[in-house]
Each structure stands twice: as C-alpha cells, then as structure tokens.
Image (cartoon, rainbow, N blue to C red; front, side, top):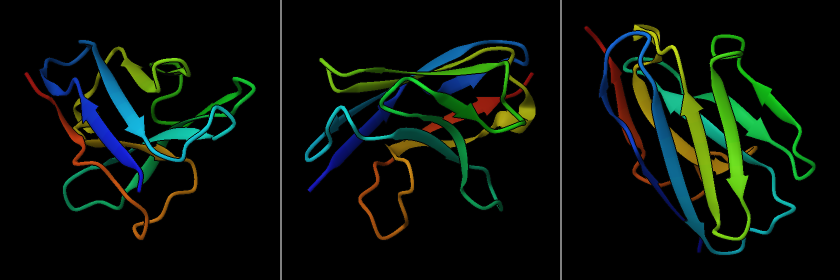
Length: 116
C-alpha cells in the first residue's frame, strides 16, 4: 500500500507561481523515479515532470522552462515549482512513480486553477 498526498494547489493569476508538495509513504525508495502528472477537464492525464534517481529531469514541452521538479529523499517529499503559470496549466495535479497506471494507487490530487 502506497499513499500519496498532494497539496499546494489553488487559484492563481496568469504569470503567477505555485509550489506543489507531495508526501508519499510506502514501498518507495530513493531509487524510484518520481513524477508529477496532471489532468485537465475533458483531457487525458499527462506526464508533466519526471525525476530519475540520478537527478535527471524531464518535462513536458508545454511546461519546460517554467516548472521544476525536486525531491527530498529524507523527508519523502516531492515538489513541483510552477512559475509563469498559464490558463492552460489549469488541472488537477498528481504525484506518483513514473510509469504509474490507473491501476496503481493515486492520491486525491491538488487543484490548480490559473485565471484572471
């Protein structure tokens, strides 16, 4: 059983910033590849950012240069710093291991709404 708890979402104006946090508990080690996903209304869930155990990161083209994924192995926390937010970033954001499917355990996510 793995638990994920996302937080930090909210309403923000375009070009604003938010920092999302994710705490995870269970069979997840420092060697695990962690990631952030998001799902906008009427859209498929998509991978936003990924971090490998070596610190290598990958981002969706739509967020590259604006989002930064980070992990604190000691605290079992995953973060997503989001800068220069756009209305298109509006979605529910989830954290999980990279490659997770709907059959895996997911948290409730945190809502991010970018609107003026």
